[in-house]
Image (cartoon, rainbow, N blue to C red; front, side):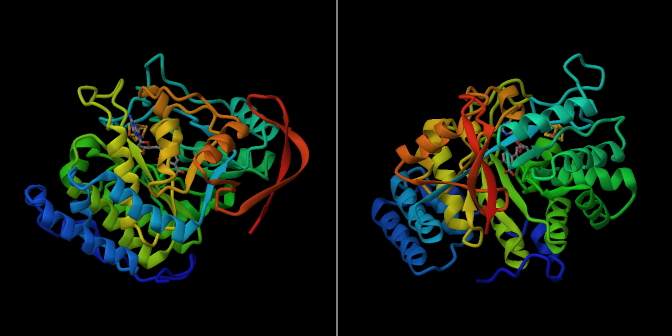
Length: 417
Ligand code: V47
Ligand code: SF4
């Protein structure tokens, strides 16, 4: 394909990625099409997808028109999904660690953060962090997903040392840690380059990076949500730098708040452009906005129809990203299952200790057992495959782990490529 192997030195990202380059296509024009024109337009897009051609900005915006039947968009996305990933649906055994919720920023969509002196605020001790590592090991986890707030008083070393503490004590657990927003904060703290920070974190034990902090790249929206934290330019450059160093990363989009279709498509196009250059994104995760306890709690959360359309359009636009994740914690289990027929091939993991979504009103369980996850994938007609963080299949042989819920032994994990 077009993507270069991770770790290769690649050209700098052209600046045009980072700024708005077009006049937003008026969605209304698309909406005003009559049925005959709409059907013809959809057939054009279907032909493109069937012949492996890339969809354009306007194609993507058209597919968001509610008068384009969702099942048609879904069917097209499913074609791509099965071409890329067959009948497999991936999951992993993982846990979350949010070492602190105290944060210098105040993103308007965030229910997780806390002020320094708020009673809700916390920062975990080494012993608490080690306890999480022990629990994760006992439960067969192959991954810890580590992100948190940007604490006013914790130096860079606190963040680095907790990675080292976990890696030294639990070397088999992959640490998927720190969003680009945090890496950007560490640059500010250390006055060193992003490359230095990433390399230093990697020597402490960081294995890969999650995809958070991307939100919506378009400045019309980003400036309303989180104007002070790492901007689009910085987010993309940090991911590029990680890819150049051979660190795999994920990418996300937070949708269903104040953005419009063209902002979402613009976001996907920027990710697609960077992916053309580096090939370092493993998976894209659309994140549905949860309004409870946020400064945007006047908004409704997006409907299941919007969720499924976004999964499908992501699959169609991001032709160079291998996996699309339907994160069950935020979609809810029924929609996550349905998403497996609308473009998604991954539903994330068992997930324990999730705070970001539960603080914002998610009503999904705190964690699922391996049997639950496999069962819901099988029920959706897909073949469940356990993966590790970098999408190697996991084969379990010995029985020295216990499942979160059932207490039943889970086999030892051996990743094979
Ligand atoms: O960056 C915060 C989002 C992200 C809310 O890489 C919210 O595998 C909705 O990135 N409603 C963090 N979304 C979560 C994240 C993630 C999750 C699962 C897997 C991976 C991965 C990454 O959550 C934030 C922000 O975009 N977020 N608050 C909210 N109220
Ligand atoms: Fe802080 Fe992250 Fe919440 Fe923004 S989303 S306020 S950076 S914890």
